[in-house]
Amino acid sequence: MGSAFVTRLEGPAPEVELARDMIRRALPVAPIFVLVCAAMWSVDGAISSGYGIGIVLGNFALSAAMLAVTARISLVLMMGAALFGFLARLAIIFAAVLLVKDASWMSLPALGVTLVVTHLGLLFWEMRYVSLSLAHPGLKPRRPKPRSHQRAMKESVAP
Amino acid sequence: MSLLHQAIELASEATTTAAEGATTAAADAKATAGASSAGNAYGLAAIGPGIGIGYIVGQSISAMARQPESAGMVRSTMFLGIAFTEALALIGFVVFILLKFV
Image 1 (cartoon, rainbow over the protein chains, first blue to last red):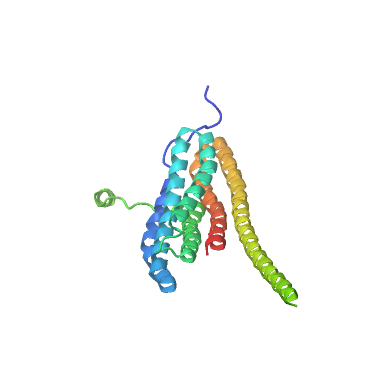
Image 2 (image 1 turned 120 degrees about the horizontal axis):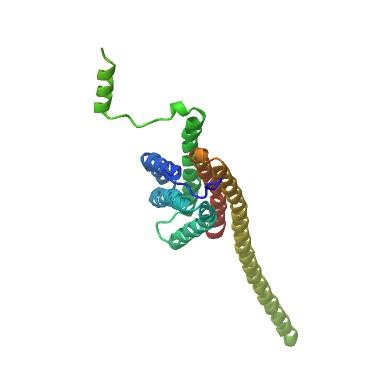
């Protein structure tokens, strides 16, 4: 007799999809943000903002990977990964900033603004899509089917 | 008379030295207090999100264990919830680095 409760999750990991989506959306927008920071804090600001964007995207990717891997093993492990992963990622971000804080190219205000704006901006942007697809599952964008499959469908429908 | 002058000079030097010492001590105390406050602010900013993430993940796991068919939706929402909660800690961290190093 099987257990009434699920203790691990098989199948695709939505976290990885979300993180990949956010990274895909961030890449075209990142140069614009870097240019804005360059206008405000010169070249140092541009480099610092690029560094900040890298930190944020790495943080999302690491978080998603940790949750996806641990969910396949055990839900309890996923809980542990979420909590200790939070601490570990904060420590990694702290170390990443501490290592370069005295570098000649570092502009801390630019880095700080980039960290907060990129993190929240990407989240709100992604939330728009997720909430839309949760509220209206029929509108969820899907990958287009291959052309040969579409042609075969048309031919089968045509008299 | 000269003895009196010498005594006054000595007293004024002692006063100046004491004032300089007090100024240095005050600056040191201010720097220490600033570092301590920044550390406390960062620590406090990390506690709230820690509690929040624990609550989010706990409730999500409970939901997924009871309704495995909704696990995909719950996990998406959980991931976004964790990331939003983490933003609070990130804001605390940014405030910390701006207070401490700028």
